[in-house]
Image (cartoon, rainbow, N blue to C red):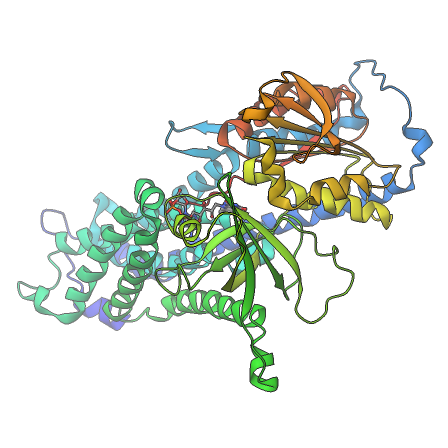
Length: 584
Ligand SMILES: Cc1cc2nc3c(=O)[nH]c(=O)nc-3n(C[C@H](O)[C@H](O)[C@H](O)COP(=O)(O)OP(=O)(O)OC[C@H]3O[C@@H](n4cnc5c(N)ncnc54)[C@H](O)[C@@H]3O)c2cc1C
């Protein structure tokens, strides 16, 4: 504080000197406003925790109610009188919230998709950040706000860094997955950059402390921090992340460290504002190291001198997919994914890529100490996955050493819904297959409310079914009789030997034997499938989609046709979750 009083010039050139009251308020605001912004965010996180609590409680009550309902009471066609029923108001309200918060896409152009809730959160964040930073300064005098904004920015880094981590406290508290928080990480980081640079411009406007001030090390460090921050901004724009992810990630980590460490030494009295940012970063790195060590069974090496690495069997299919099979000691849930590093083809030790787990943790009754079987199916792209495909030979399994970090994600449970609809395209089936297995397993142990499952999978060729080694067929063949499962495989590009038979045919898998699903040539009519299911369901529905963007957009659009008014008149309320295989 003494530094601020002695080193700051009292008068901004070209502006009248601030009044004594304004100067006095400035010192109070320098101290309090950064904290107010912080408290506002903590309050918002608290609100998200309350929403999480109520949604978990409602899922629990729904599960209990539906499990208690006798199957007989669910028989028969659904008849609706189409009249408004006020007792449906809570369900209709939840539907309206979901429509606006999760399914409404803010039109920001083709290059960006943001749902209503993220948009609202982003706008609210900017309003709070900028208003607490810049308001209440007479004549917009930088003398009154230039130090304050730097304190606001310093304290914000705690959130910015927390929002970036795979293991972060906000995700733990709110149940929001780190991938979704990552969007807020970018928005917050860019807003804070504006505030941090405002500090720089403000100080320049006040003329810093004297003509030689730029020779002072701490001012130079401020400049280094600001320039590094600008580089962080430009090198993290979407095209860079999309087309050069391997370049983006290491440069991002180095530049962010440079930004924060130089800001730390630039700052005088408020260094402690930045400690928590370092703690957040260290927490994430510590958890990730722990995950990798645990999954590699390091204790076996340390105490038993046994080989500790994770060995995977890798297989390349002629239809351009790779299957990795290995054992994972860490527990996981359907919908989870893991980050995999493959030393044989990774370019640098931290090059880890996310893939969804297609197997169910209860597939193996006993965990023999090596963990449970995990299958990942990978569609080669242009980087690590292509190098992996080049490393393998079609049809010749090869053993690979892996480092596995995870599992990650906060996938929702579908067990409390009476109808579960799962729609996938290509390798998106890893995500939906794990949910199908979850429903079947839990139905057997009477811990699930689902009575009906609709499983839709669009593949390019029938041979794609081989990716999961018959897991889908086995699951459907062993499904309990009381659970109605409709499985449709849509083949979008014909194999040579399939061209003869057009239209829909039932029941032959890739090897030609009888299969428990229906084959149809062409794309699934997602809108019709969803409309039919929603209008004929008695109870709330869960819809899970994992596939191309167009598939998800169509599903969202269809679900939005059954909004507030429709649910009030008796239509089932729909809860949807999407895995788009992208967090960039
Ligand atoms: C939660 C999640 C689950 C996924 N599950 C699967 C799956 O089961 N099967 C599957 O085939 N694919 C899955 N993906 C996509 C898969 O991670 C990418 O295709 C893969 O990382 C591309 O690697 P590459 O170096 O060959 O890609 P590149 O050709 O370098 O890039 C292709 C695309 O992948 C993105 N990408 C590259 N590296 C990463 C990374 N480390 N993290 C996130 N995105 C990256 C790029 O931004 C680009 O958009 C999943 C992605 C996510 C986010």
